[in-house]
Image (cartoon, rainbow, N blue to C red):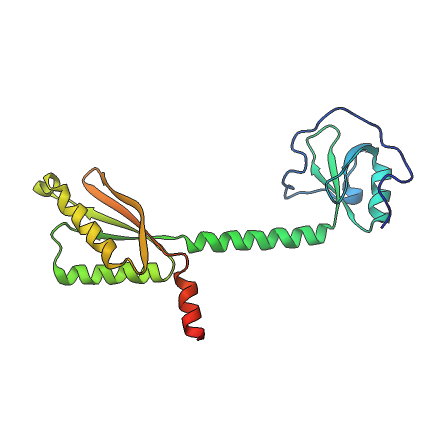
Length: 204
């Protein structure tokens, strides 16, 4: 790979462009699609080369077997970086997929209970909460008060605390019980190491 700036001297400037090295837009211009007389060039490792003619920037990209990519088109002059654009797009797609996967893993399920819930119904609801936590989901538990029940918030608090204790092996209280109008809510989250421990146990 040829050293940058070995055969030409970039024009110096004290101007500091905004959005240097920022996210690349969906309509990124690369190589000969960049139609400006000069650009502020950034090397493949983030080094500042300076302001150079577009012809020199394209030549450097070709010599280094890299692409000239416009990363800040609104700057004056536009900021371009030498990089492997194909590799950049691949890594960006990988990060986007990982981000979507993480968002799916943090889906919040919901379970609603009454303060004077029947024991059988409680066991059913507890089973749902335990299953959701085991699947890696957060669970928002809502106690719904009606009529005179609103004057007995301690009933809801005790019920939520009991539920948290009953599923403590699968999750923990992420958001403590709080009054929300006629309801009382609490958020449970799964233990981060829960799945890993299960996998190790199965493997052994």
